Structure formats: C-alpha cells, structure tokens
Length: 113
Image (cartoon, rainbow, N blue to C red):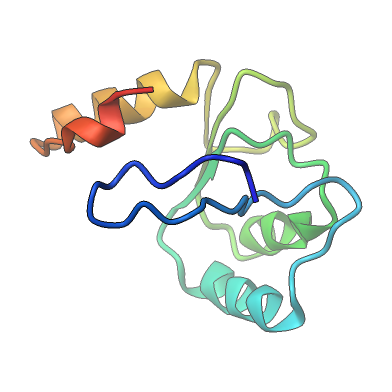
C-alpha cells in the first residue's frame, strides 16, 4: 500500500501501487495478454518508463511486428533510437495537453495533488 487514500469521495479506499519495480515480473497471465496485445495493437504508448524491466519483451514484439510506438519520458531508454516518436517531457503535462486536445475534461480530483 502507498499510505494514501483514494481521492474519490465515494471510495476513500487505500491505494496500492501498480508499478512494477526493478526485479519484479509481470504475472504470466498478464504477460500473455500483453504479448497478444502487442501483435494486435495499432500503436503502443510507453508512458514514463525507462524500459529497463524484464517486461520489455513486449517492446521487442512490437518492433518485430513493425508496429509504431511512442515513448513519453524524461529518462533515456534503450529504445529511444527505435521508437516512432520520442517525447522528452513531463508525462503529466503531456497527458493533460493530450486530454485537452482530444476535447475531454478531467474531474477536479484528478487535477489536484
């Protein structure tokens, strides 16, 4: 658990981290789903990740299938020279601009820290 509570007033549950840390692996069922998705995707977005995880086999599959992929991160990755588009920027700023450009709005609890 992260020690934080869910910001949605109706929920107030305890937040758990969904981040995969170095040395951790995806569950095999999740890995198989991501592998299947790699073959079927139109575009892969890599968001705020340095791609040093063992789960980067999915990136290799996307490259093998010649699918476009975009990396948005402030950190260098091993795939910077292979991605279709590389955005060196703060992930939150990019995603907020993307949401706005697509004509969507976010609830206030998302926008507050």
